[in-house]
View 1 (tube, rainbow, N blue to C red):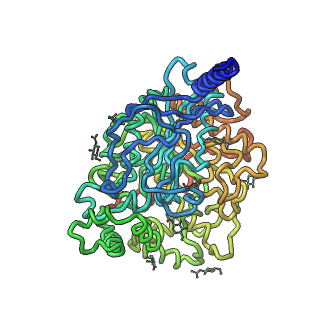
View 2 (view 1 turned 180 degrees about the vertical axis):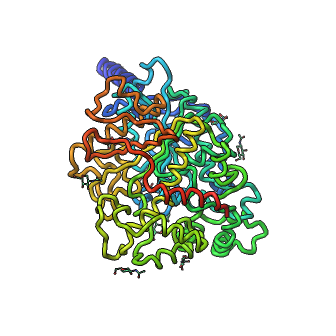
View 3 (view 1 turned 45 degrees about the vertical axis):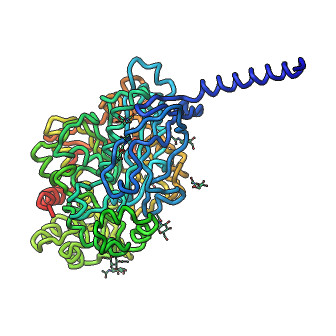
Length: 572
Ligand SMILES: *[C@@H]1O[C@H](CO)[C@@H](O)[C@H](O)[C@H]1NC(C)=O
Ligand SMILES: *[C@@H]1O[C@H](CO)[C@@H](O)[C@H](O)[C@H]1NC(C)=O
Ligand SMILES: *[C@@H]1O[C@H](CO)[C@@H](O)[C@H](O)[C@H]1NC(C)=O
Ligand SMILES: *[C@@H]1O[C@H](CO)[C@@H](O)[C@H](O)[C@H]1NC(C)=O
Ligand SMILES: *[C@@H]1O[C@H](CO)[C@@H](O)[C@H](O)[C@H]1NC(C)=O
Ligand SMILES: *[C@@H]1O[C@H](CO)[C@@H](O)[C@H](O)[C@H]1NC(C)=O
Ligand SMILES: *[C@@H]1O[C@H](CO)[C@@H](O)[C@H](O)[C@H]1NC(C)=O
Ligand SMILES: *[C@@H]1O[C@H](CO)[C@@H](O)[C@H](O)[C@H]1NC(C)=O
């Protein structure tokens, strides 16, 4: 070998060694129970991402339409965890732009890179995604509207660092198909059980990431908030030690659409079975599990077979939550629980012009609670939700009565629909938790983002971009960027909310960051804990000095009390 060649060889070897060294220094690794994952260091946020980490056996073949199974194999060497996984199969705009698959049970960890600088392992905040107004048919953890980087960055800036986690769970028929036959083999509420399995995986493995498994907060909005509500009462309120707090945004333990047992869906199930050619199979479930994905997907997507709800199965969902809350059968932990001022415009009937028309939709059960109401109860609702625009929603419209396709009584029917969907349940959950000795922080979000018409108002989902401090509007490709052209105070409100959430995840106290010297605008009130004798909400409002104010949680008391008492009657 010539001297030249030797030099070249030496040089190459040195370069290679250097490259290996730098890659080793910048690519974080973590040893889970099953093997070692290599994540990605993201200098812009000084964060480590571990994306697309499996937490369950792929729910395919014999595991389709079945409860999820825990991972039971380990691997040698290392595996990459640097890119988001696909989304679960779902139906609607949340799935646009994403690849979907049945094999979708993966989670993501977003960790401050300096996690080891702190004296103790970090608390953990787990985001459970939304799904079109609580329908469990679409959504996914790679969705950039749920980008955890900014809230985790806020948590570091205020000295309340936490590790953010998000995961996928099965949707629509894939996660919630129900029938007497499926219930017979114990397969129920699969999508919720996916979430539960992810929580178990996090208990077993988050320590390896630098997280503290005893300091987990579960957190979600809409179907995600409902999911947190379900975990709070799961297995009749048994405390499996999976979390120490819950955050419910526009969702709670009380199910607005009532609850059914699995056999309620027998008709829809049979139609699907017939559609995919499994009618005369000796083992119908085996047939469903062997049928090609495309065949089932086509049947789900082109018929009415995409909407399935969690069911009362006497196991994961033991009873109607209102009974459990009343009896104290829930996991006793601190909560944040809130709703938006004009929630109901997303859930109300459109085009109601007369009281007779409102009565009719209540009595035929075509609006919440989606069960025909006895005439006396319908009359009572008419009375407690008067036809007076001044007390209707959207609140911002003052006393104006709309006169267009939304209907002359839009403001009345929307007020009812929002209360029946999430607001009454929110108030009840705050009352029960506070009365049961659990700290409850309750809120009303009252800021109209860019792009939302005033007749829609501060509707469902609008607080999400604020909580995530997503002021660049990542992920808002289908709907308008909520922060485009809005006043400076909107940005300040996003910081305030995001930091309050981070403080709660870190300390169970949304106010704690203020004591640590982080900047808070003058005039911002403390967020009071709920007190049943004198119930208070914080109102997040970018249009007032201090960005928030505190109000008695007594608005529309008569209407909300009526809904709370009728909700207890529904077990279908
Ligand atoms: C794999 O990981 C799961 C989840 O943490 C754990 O329950 C299981 O024991 C592990 N199995 C093996 C063989 O490593
Ligand atoms: C893991 O569980 C599956 C059932 O889902 C089973 O078929 C397989 O044999 C198990 N593997 C091991 C290594 O235990
Ligand atoms: C979807 O999958 C295809 C094929 O693997 C790939 O080329 C494409 O980049 C993926 N799209 C997204 C948005 O991940
Ligand atoms: C959040 O968005 C920023 C900007 O697009 C991106 O660099 C970062 O990777 C995202 N974080 C996560 C956890 O997806
Ligand atoms: C369902 O059908 C719509 C409309 O044809 C299509 O855009 C979408 O990709 C389909 N979804 C799935 C999961 O196949
Ligand atoms: C879906 O259900 C609605 C309401 O029950 C019904 O009017 C409609 O015909 C159904 N569509 C299909 C494709 O089955
Ligand atoms: C109520 O009035 C609006 C506007 O004229 C109309 O579009 C709508 O169909 C009416 N609703 C009913 C139930 O007649
Ligand atoms: C607050 O101010 C914005 C912008 O000035 C305005 O569009 C909105 O209607 C106001 N009210 C609420 C409830 O956000």
